[in-house]
Image (tube, rainbow, N blue to C red; front, side):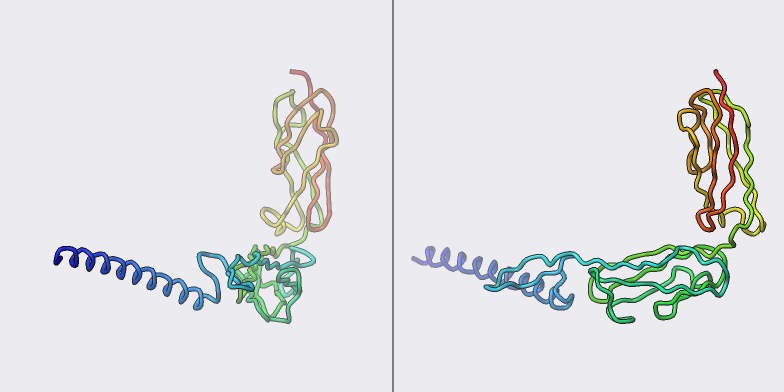
Length: 226
């Protein structure tokens, strides 16, 4: 009899221990959910009628502007913020930051160009764990663009690098965003860095266009047989 009572007591203790562990874990999850405003394991949970819990739809925040470029120091640009497709009141439910305030600084929803360079604007929701970004560049606009080439004539399969010069000189290098296009891809193709590749016999006109000002220039490449 005493042995049977001991075994029953042991089972009871184990059941109490398991129940206690479950209770503690449930309490920790509940407390974590409350402290994180319903977010747990990266998801927001919302109760439905009857106590059912489902995942809340993911939220989206976006920051957009009319242009990605500012062309002089001191120029300002208004940003538009949307949360789940709706524009909130100024500063309500989000925070705006600049990755480099020595290039672009922010006041309210207005950004101001401080110096040449690139800066990433981040809009972060203060309620949901989401953020959106926009890259802005402060540049010196080109007023003259001239193309040249490593080789005026190439064979099929060979390449030639298109180069450019600009005025003013401050607009060279990273301040110029060129888009290249070939008049005939069956004769020559050109990639985003201005490398032309011969494809077939003939003459192809390569056009480079500045994305900021729309200014463009052309250069003819002759492709001959191998």
